[in-house]
Length: 373
Image (cartoon, rainbow, N blue to C red; front, side, top):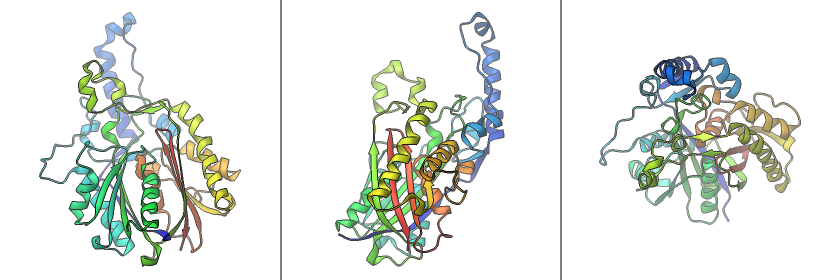
């Protein structure tokens, strides 16, 4: 069995950012027009009037202040409120491929690797743009990587599950190094006309190089001490969009064909599950929570992260112990915890212990214990 390290991470950030003020202005313009257009039905009690949103509400509910997006104009247009992403021909690289390649190139550079060193590609994300061919095989072709590739989806936990799959393949000698990428266009599945969720998501892509420790030369290495995964079925986070929708016309356009969640139930269910899984994972590896210098948690909601850290540490975490990036990136699904790792790792001294953890629809939870080399 080979020892395994993460030797490089990469990040692709879209050029456009939307502030809460911009998002609220667009949403409220839609609400005002809707209420005006339906004034008589609202007065008769046949239609429920919509309520406006506010920057204060968004920041209190989530901790999010802005988000990067693939397309800004389409989202902010009150008559559209959907990103405008032109269709590409089958002879062009897809947009997820393009994002993944951007993140992968930085990860390869930080790992000191070339494409000739990579034996496999895993695209692990919530929002795959098509059923087939696998986006991973497209990324493999775009980069010129020999070997194999496949897609996987475990919602927001896709990255940690992808790291676990790559780690197992390397431990058993199936690959020397694997590129695991998380291209997420979360704004494509978001209902920007829903007050409770229109602010939650942003777009980004991350990449991680996982490789045999004896072949690694990077200055940015982390030993993969262990991985632990958990899934438990729940409908509290769901998206019913898919190819079968065309076979049930009565459901086309319904609210559940985009992201929907029971936020309070998710908060109540998931926070203790995550804290318990991380604590158990550390104990299984004869490690104490107090020895962990950094928690790179899934960046979905600030209040969730604060509570999980508090449950683990028995106190409020210091900012450097559980760094936050969702204030500027929002929830980027599988990419979130990896963005936190990418941006908050270089200051750690050798020997530092960290935990990368994600949690989301499924429910799905992943924990990866890392030690800085």
